[in-house]
Image 1 (tube, rainbow, N blue to C red):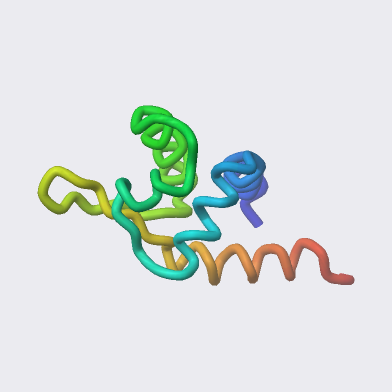
Image 2: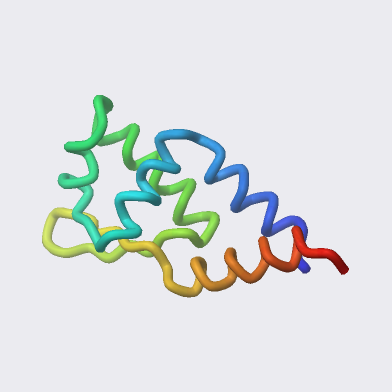
Length: 91
């Protein structure tokens, strides 16, 4: 178990705004402009939050035209579920 990586992921998820972004992306991939509609902050602030989530390997990003499209990484979801089960289970 990579405790450093788990800690990085949990720190990224600890912010309520980033948690909401993860929740939004759990339904479908979204353009940054669509994510921004759910918050009362600026594009640069959204970029900061997305960079944190991308660095923690929670989301992936692709550029389409002038906009970035974000999606929740399927690998992250599986790894996180497995890690939490392993971490919290009786051994």
